[in-house]
Image 1 (cartoon, helix red, strand yellow):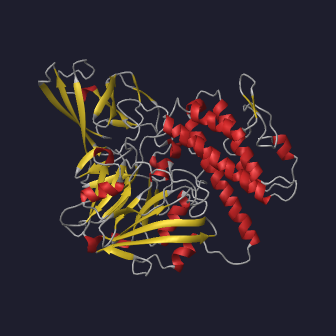
Image 2: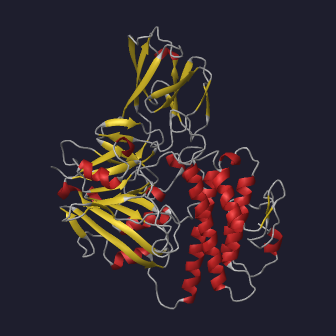
Image 3: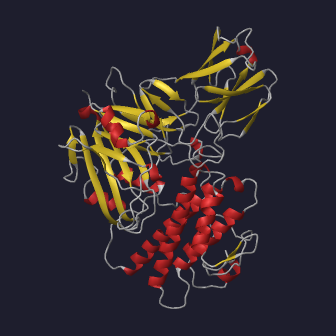
Length: 562
């Protein structure tokens, strides 16, 4: 990023230099002059000159990302870029008192130059990740502008500003007996934490605490697309008194292929005892067992993977499907193996006496004894041919195969997220936060986590859940963000610290960003209300135009006994 000019400066601190060098060591492959003016002209291949850098780059983002994402997403990313650049320019104009280069100017330089670099790359791998990188870059520059601004403010202010954890302690939010909580249904408590913190600036966080023994509530995990993607309506229809958005789903990945489609849930989903989606990736999941015993109704969270999962293959042949066979295969038994996108994108069947099936959900999409493409949100199941029932030819054109799953232990409802923030169980690890151990690597979805270039430095809207000692209480936090006046957002580490300060001994992450949502049933009106702020667009103030909330694609509902 104009390295020669930057290296000549002796008035830049290390923090701003680190930000400038994120997303690559230089930008030699970005066309256009490299200087310290973020509004300098940019050249296209036909050598046309553009003087309005913001509009020019917003238009490029909105059009050039269409090969990877739909028009609505591309347009939204373009608007986010323009919002961040305009806000930084306004701050630069307000704060500049002399000819020195400001941090806002340098951040706009990083945003503009890296955007040109990302859009202009000819690298085969990176050219397929433009949308992901643009999205991450915009959030990164915005987040770092806020972090650096907070640091400047603290140096100038004389009075003590509490940290986020100190705000939690001040209002005694670690216990539902605090006067800041409202019990809106027996065993259900809600509070909103709003204020200014020294480490994350303005915060707006909704906290839901559920006494699991007192409320005796049922947790219900759903693919919301099958019922209703409006969380308030979904909660009302199911009789829930509270609800939150769920786990990850396919969205920004560039290689979503049928039968997968955008908004498909990623990872384990168990609903009413049925394994709707297997735990392809070994990730943290929120779960509830229901049955007899002292643990009935308690909610837990642990890492769950494919080890010990039984895959039940229903084989039918003939034009009328009249011939049936069942093949039951247990992962990691009898040389049965599972390979997912965190391992590789192409699976080679190494042994001549083995066969592989590419599986997405309940559907087998390909069969081969040589090699297979690993499905984005699915897996390749490989095993010895000797396990196949006599007379069954799996790669026969007339063979139809469907798959069902059984876990090695019984769950009534469960939803995957990740990573696990921390746990009081030695077998899980007291301070997890290990994304690679939860298969957030390679091209495993969501690639916003698996291919993160910011190393958890982005302040974003978050959704986190945790349980207190002995699983007595469930605590859910909906962290707002992308709002300059009221909520900047948190990092993953910040969300982890928040849940620990609320008294949780075990906690994990669910999907955040624009999809983050929390609904509670108002007492006494009975109306189901969204209590968190909309976080789709980046807002400078509450006067900014309202924006529609993204649909909720998966949901976790909390339903009291009837």
